[in-house]
Image 1 (cartoon, rainbow, N blue to C red):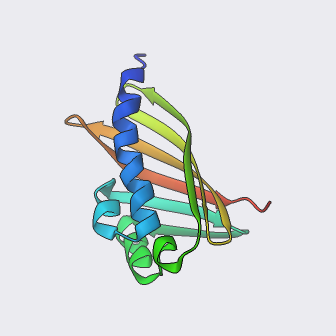
Image 2 (image 1 turned 135 degrees about the horizontal axis):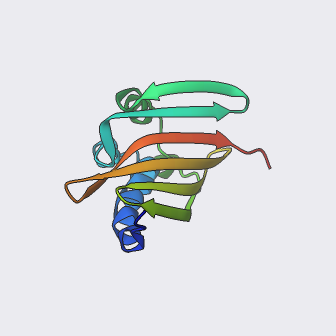
Image 3 (image 1 turned 45 degrees about the horizontal axis):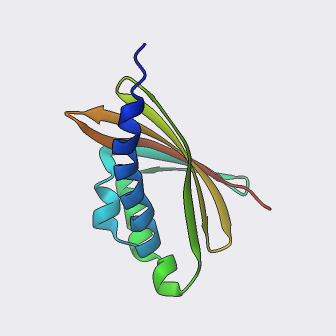
Length: 125
């Protein structure tokens, strides 16, 4: 098992546009961080949902972004683990009334990291 800690920086290059796309509502930028067949699963206040990448991007496109609404937006990378061409990133995102924890699974193909799966939940403070 080879751990590629040197790829953590490359992964942050994907995560920062992911954060920016969520904050600004830029679905082109956000879409570039996801594999075309990525799936998203969530538990938001006890309500589960599952979406495709395209369904997720459509939802982002139809909502008012935190930036345009004047709402605060906080994001941080809590951890990144890399083993070979697979990575897991644990993120924290606060926007609107939500306190999201995101777990992104990323896969490296042809020296390019993309999100292949996103799971998230809202933690009530």
